[in-house]
Length: 381
Ligand SMILES: Cc1cc2nc3c(=O)[nH]c(=O)nc-3n(C[C@H](O)[C@H](O)[C@H](O)COP(=O)(O)O)c2cc1C
Image (cartoon, rainbow, N blue to C red; front, side, top):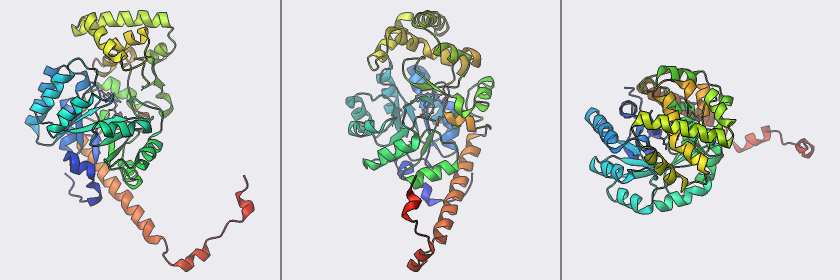
């Protein structure tokens, strides 16, 4: 491991979560498995296990696998509308994980219960207006995901969201998320006033991420402008790589979506050994949190199967690929260790460039004479 010591990389994020660097590997369904979390936390980042798509038994096995491999701290990602959310929280408490992350807020009681056991709460928000409520509910850190981020996402771009949230001065560490991939981004976020960065897509594109190579290739060849947001998959805006499946979904009418939803639901039932009733029950819980129509709710119930076709089965043309726009700028698959070390080195170099720049700015007040004062007519547009 790189012995580089850069004290500015010790931030409230590293202090609160106990990781080495102010970098979070976010939860990604069927991607942030034990294997990826272990690799990212051993590299010095803080990793979240994507338990929102796991049954409790699967989550317990993953937690045990990580704990047996390393003492480094990590967290677990949950969804408020998950069927077994209570049992997942019990696991987090029993195994003393360092943090939970969530998007749609679980109720205040659940958050209080988790925090009472010393587990940190790390919600992700996508709009400035949600920041105060998230902190009131008990956020220990706030991940602010801008619209360019992967998976479910909002419309405010990362830097604008960050500015909006930092200006509210809410008294909790703020983490920049959406579109980050390198050390320049980390340095910029720190200079901007954030306490670190969180990355999804960049960690998906590592050697240890379990995503099949056929699917990783689609991410590596994706273009920044061809990773749009669509609400057609589950009724919520989600950023995904534009492929034939997404194009077909986008152009579907209500009836063809209903038929598609039923067929997929049936296939999902057969594959996952879960009843249609169970699928619809989880869709119903979801629909109470959204304004989705019945057909969208049906789609939401089997969205996991469509995603898994790409992310687990490795048949990207028959599935959808949630992704940040940053995939358009990534064309390598480093190990997590190499990725994190490159980010640390690059951030340190960027900071050195900045202090060099600061050193070259004259503090001599007379030097202001050298700066030409614009005439009024220069301001005319
Ligand atoms: C393939 C994929 C799956 C995702 N699954 C989840 C998830 O299960 N839970 C969640 O809270 N966020 C999920 N997200 C969002 C990420 O955790 C993260 O917030 C986002 O990717 C950040 O933007 P970036 O990709 O530009 O770094 C997912 C994102 C991707 C790309």
